[in-house]
Image 1: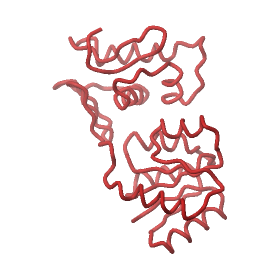
Image 2 (image 1 turned 90 degrees about the vertical axis):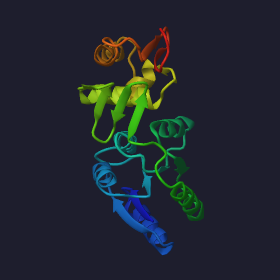
Image 3 (image 1 turned 90 degrees about the horizontal axis):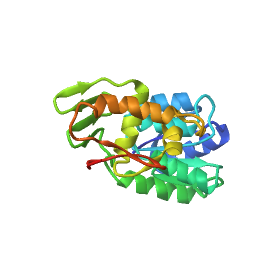
Image 4 (image 1 turned 180 degrees about the vertical axis):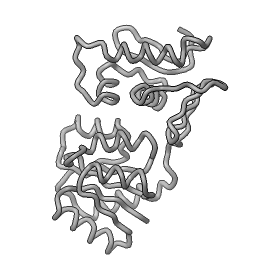
Length: 224
């Protein structure tokens, strides 16, 4: 089984690599977020062990960009132990979360569990009704019509489809798509949703994006 460790603390990275290789794994190490994301998207790994506080690109952003194309199991290994950090990691698509300092035997057990899950849980192709998303090729279609989206529009649609049926607040959407704290005086989310609707909903009888007044937005098959 092949693992990727994305860890900037040299001592921790060396400890993980040595221990995991002695346990029979093939291990690559990246010392910053950009190198980690490059390896995670260009190579094939069974499990990725990812720190959060990384130079050049933090672990949150690495995971979010990785989930645009890959569903490789990810275990966050970090000193951040607040409940909101764990929730954020899991909501972004992490499969497990372990806080430093950690017992190596526990890390090993969690890696084995993730490795046994086999193929990624979510395919690269998603569909809701006649809407189809190819996350790898970043292509979108409704029926036979191909729809061109900007990178930000694609990220927004991909989020809504992955969380189909779940009402997402403007704060959640801003955090996931723009990686920003939501400012109540800003209508950036509403503007982006309006532009996305113009491309994927306005010309079709069945609407997919729905407004939940006072809360946010949900994507699903239902009548307004």
